[in-house]
Length: 458
Image 1 (cartoon, rainbow, N blue to C red):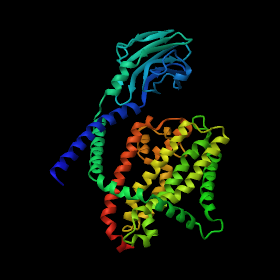
Image 2: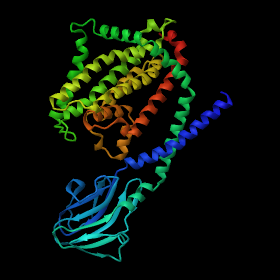
Image 3: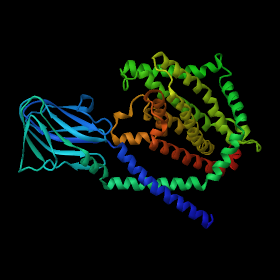
């Protein structure tokens, strides 16, 4: 590699590092869950309610902008922790409804960093309470509740600015390591961009040939059975019915965010069916079409696309099936539904990127087929298809979102249920496409190096 190209790659890597460091920092701030916690010691059991006012909502205190926790340890200290929106401006703590002498200590706000709230330094508004700060025990308030509707309220804005701009060692390590990784991947993609374009261009030029081969592959897959291609639709339908029965009837899964469970479920499992079928088929494309691989004049890079196209016929039917089921429940297509086309392209690109790599390696490492089978089995459960990711804490939710299929499953639900435009999730979108182009580039490099040896191992 010439010195000029090395300098270009170094420049690209530096730009990617700086940009990704800022991006990761913004992501952590935007996605962080804010919590307000404090310890309570009171003589009576009671309901402690926290109200919050946000930038978007503002206005008066109301039940929709509140969280409830029960204090159930009279005479003992108990920690109360409430999750708040990260744009909270003002907080109000309701101290039950009974007359009582209440002690509150260790008031803290937590997001990226933890900020102790210095109760003696904040401007507290009160109602039906008398406050006497304990001079012997810092961070403690002694409150005499008069009853009725007692509360204390304070501005949260200066506290929020502190917890969102605090930097722990872990925070800095995560930012630096993530930025270095992104810079390396970006440089890797740019370095081999010509190879990637050189492989994708002829595939596009031969798209009609690939489509005809895909049609033939779909027909011959079920040629020896009485029902023929009908089996391609029966098996996924039975699987959907089975999972629906297990989750909703057996495990009594209720509605998800006021949406019937079956609608929420099929929006996740149908794109997974396509990914699983297409990926496993495309991985074995070179083996199944070994007679074409041995022909020097045939563009064998088309073969993974042939298997993807074969699986696509069934997937298009099930997209229609989604619309029918949603219509039965009174959910009709909207302008957001058009996004399904975008997420379909995402799935095809993801499958091709991964299968070009696995199809090249499986010829030399036969056990890879078994490994992929296990990964796909586990992948169904590790992709939030039958359960919402909101069940997890921040750390595990972040880990599960690293699965690229999470982006597609969430995208289908955004299009059909939540009505979220794809560019409203910019961090997830950038991560998904960086993952795809990184794997595609690795697949292209591997394919180019091993292609000359394919005929020797087939």
